[in-house]
Length: 81
Image (tube, rainbow, N blue to C red; front, side, top):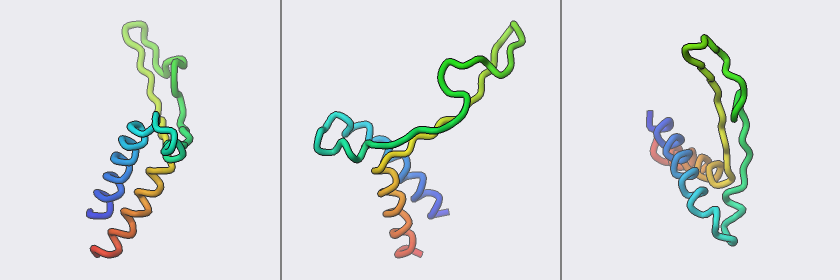
């Protein structure tokens, strides 16, 4: 349970800090990342019943800072466990 909390906290904090430092030239390398997923953007809906349209999709963006914080969270977990 602690491991899941630490990893999720690392992902959230890493994303927030990466967005906050995106304008700082010296920290630009921390924000580098790639996004991947399916049915992203303005694509056709998966279900169109004329009354409502339902589009489902998943997108995940991972930055360098998030990877570093996840590794740190795993090290902290090893020390706490």
